[in-house]
Amino acid sequence: MAESYSENFTTEESEMVQKLMKKSEEELNYIDTICGRQVGMLLKMLIKIGGIKKILEIGTFTGYSAMMMAEALPEDGHITTCEINERFIEIAKPFFDREEYQHKITLIEGDARETVPSTKSTFDLVFIDADKANYLHYYELAKAKLNPNGIIVIDNTLWGGEAIDHSSEKGEIIDELNRKITDDDTTEQVMLPVNDGITIVRLK
Ligand SMILES: C[S@@+](CC[C@H](N)C(=O)[O-])C[C@H]1O[C@@H](n2cnc3c(N)ncnc32)[C@H](O)[C@@H]1O
Image 1 (spheres, rainbow, N blue to C red):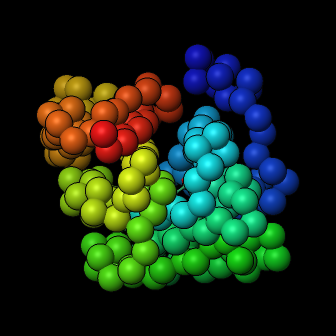
Image 2: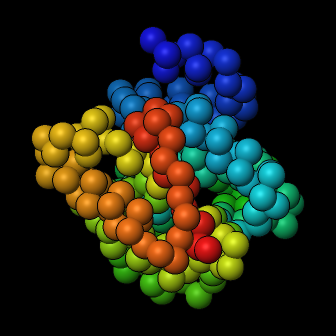
């Protein structure tokens, strides 16, 4: 109940992002893997407040969070977003090719465990939202690609409560990551119980 109440009091997605959500739902019959309005809007706020220009996203799905973030970026800002699933890429591409997004979004197809290390850039914000089994690995990749004063934003750090009670393997992995981040003397972090849990990490 608190979740939908808070969604109702969070700024709505743009018309184009709403079109993407509708198209994704029609094509796939589900869109519950998108990060959702509160996380999307939080990302937009962080980008605008932090003057963020270069973003890496690990886990595009059909493009909801990439389009949300692109809308918050200045004209010379850029997102590199990584996705492995061709079906999702097919849905995302026509939206990313639109005039308002094309100069801001580059989609890298393939396994992020291989594509991220081969990107030459470093980033002001890395958004981790791909397969949970590899979250520990993505965290290390993100840290290596982060600019000074950059932030890492990690979605699903509660994993439906399973990170707390260890009722699944993915929950255990996410709890391991949460502990690793907390024990890391080189970072400071905040975990927010927004949607499925979101953690923001910055290098000290
Ligand atoms: C939770 S969804 C991303 C949602 C998206 N960030 C949003 O808010 O709209 C996770 C995505 O990660 C992708 N993925 C899973 N494993 C991957 C990998 N090894 N490399 C790249 N993408 C991967 C999945 O195909 C899926 O589309």
